[in-house]
Image (tube, rainbow over the protein chains, first blue to last red):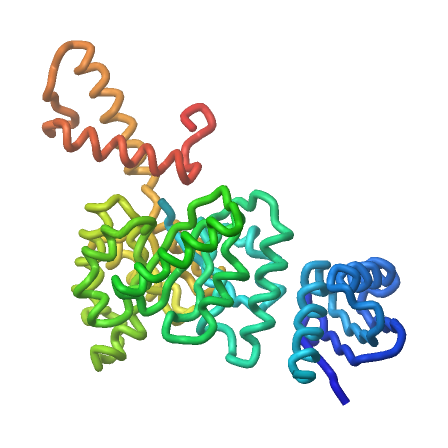
Amino acid sequence: MLTGIAGTLESNDAMITVTPADKLTIEVKSVVDAFYHDQIVKVIKDTLFDSKIANISVMCQDKGALDYTIRARLLTAISRMEEQNG
Amino acid sequence: MVRSMLFIPGNNPAMLQNADVFGADAVIIDLEDAVSIQEKDAARILVKAYLESIDHPPMKIYIRINGLDTTDYEKDLQSVVTDQIDGIVLPKAKVCDVERLLTLLYKIESETHMQKIIGIIPIVESAKSVLEIEKLAALSRIQGMLLGAEDLSADMELMRTITGTEIEYPRARMAFACKAYKIDAIDTPFTDTSDNLGLIADCQKAQNLGLNAKAAIHPNQLETIHDVFSPSLQRIEWAKRVLKAAKKADDQGLGVFSLDGKMIDKPIIERATKIMESAKRYRLLPVENA
């Protein structure tokens, strides 16, 4: 199965895994989930919107990453998934 | 001019997000040796996102791209050449490499309608680069030169030593060239981050040869580097007294005068002026003098 993974489980980073899907699903596991869950989901949705991707499965394991780090790891994961696709 | 340039691994979010709090005069975000081949893509995207997120950071920002003998450097440049950075640090730089980089920078700046003119800091880390130091210093956009002693020693088939005898010649040659072209002469990093006495001695050797800055590989090296490469309070006090006496002599129409029994003339006054300029630049003066 096509999968793109980027990032690490180190502090201030996020590991993001994406796979093709026929609808949008976003799963977030975060050390700061109680405070920032909605913000993390928003960053993911905004990044997908900017990348013109509507249907995809995103799994974000967040270790306190800032918004730009989550965005960067998501873009890298997508790029790696697309590379596998040729 | 800077005193310190702190290397920050380009794929390390924790270091990147704290880049502005370490207190370095400049940071070098590294896309080269600090990033594994498998993570080059991730580092480029992360650094680009970081640059888009910052607004007027207190330090200068340089990016060390991958060498022009790799397949990564063009992607690096496309990702990071923006108005947010001050310059590119070019590894294993020879004159022909800097000229190629200049062409690429002109092209990107023109295509992206950038406001800023991006500078270049070549790393002198091969025997051939040492022989080209003067030509490198004279090239357009060169803001400084960084000595890369580890690669240089490997190229020369020399062992690195704690005394640094093997790099005295390139240090001195670089110092003269940089001084002649009024650019930063930046010393090689001291690689033992737990040896502060060794770092002090290494900084002093570089400073005695005329270098004005040092690269750091850990934030805990910055305080020592700043201590050595900043004018001491004693020197600042001396410079203040010289300039005060010079003004008085000037009012009296005297070209040469004495202070503490020593003759003071134009070169001494210029040295005092430079010390005060450094003290102001690095905010070492009390508020009323700043």
